Picture 1 (tube, helix red, strand yellow):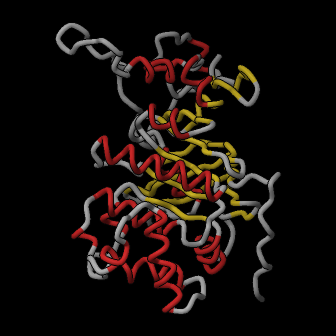
Picture 2 (tube, helix red, strand yellow):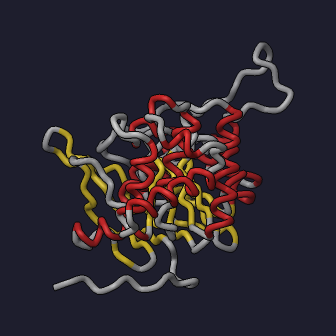
Amino acid sequence: MSAAPAAPPSATRPALAVEDLRVSYIVRGVPREVLRGVSFQVAPGEAYGLVGESGCGKSTTAYAALRYLPGNGRITGGRASIDGTDVTHISRDELYRLRATRASMVYQDPGSALNPTLRVGVQVAEAYELLGVSRRAARARAVEALRRVRISDPARVMQRYPYQLSGGMQQRVVIAMALACDPQLLVLDEPTTGLDATVEAEVLDLVRSLREESGAAVLLIAHNLGVIRHMCDRVGVMYAGKLVEEGPAEQVFDDPRHPYTVGLLRCLPRHGAHKTTNRLDTIPGFLPQIGAPLPACVYVDRCPLATEVCRDVPPPAVPVGPGRFSLCH
């Protein structure tokens, strides 16, 4: 029995809806929970950012949303839906079709995302051939795709192998491939990791322009809080596999309500501070180990405002404004 055709994109239906998502990794035969009931939505055309320390669950959330988890990863609860399609329960064939036509991902290491044995042109054209385009037409569209991502001489780049390109150029190629299907959702996992500041700014400006041009929803994973503020409409702050604060990006960064968000922002270098006289703030302690038993509030052991109730009673999601909450007592 063939699958029902996908419904057309809806302006009212979320481009991505993550509901009480739970993910575990199997380590030495033991499931260790890394996402603990994550919920958020990304509206059509919206850019949503996820921030937090390494190991807090940002990338796992992105991979789970497209069912790209590694072999030892398991979605143990909740669901992720792309434009109304529950990705967590569709067949593998339906999943491949969804990835080929409605959702794309840009990885943090473009060198690993590209096949080192194939010329760039072959790989970009293949993204169009998978959509049923003839080989000749696919090659022509590949040239246009590379031009669209501001590669000045696409015909020359098409003839090169990935190792012959800079990191910034490789990332442009990967973005061109991701946009081949005109996706409703574009997921970017640390897309500027390893790039110098100038190239990072160019790639981010490119992503922003392409998003405005295509109208795609964007889920952006980043450590750099400045990048999230510049690129995103809304932001979710993650800690130990939970979303601890969410809201419009400017409001969250200008007036943080969760102690963890406050701590992250205090760690940023301050304008005019000098390294010889001003030390950077840090958040004492460490993230809990994967799978370790956790208190009611996952941040209690590092929080300067914690009380006994924080250890024993799960904190509620307290509304602190329209479309905004903080997971704190």
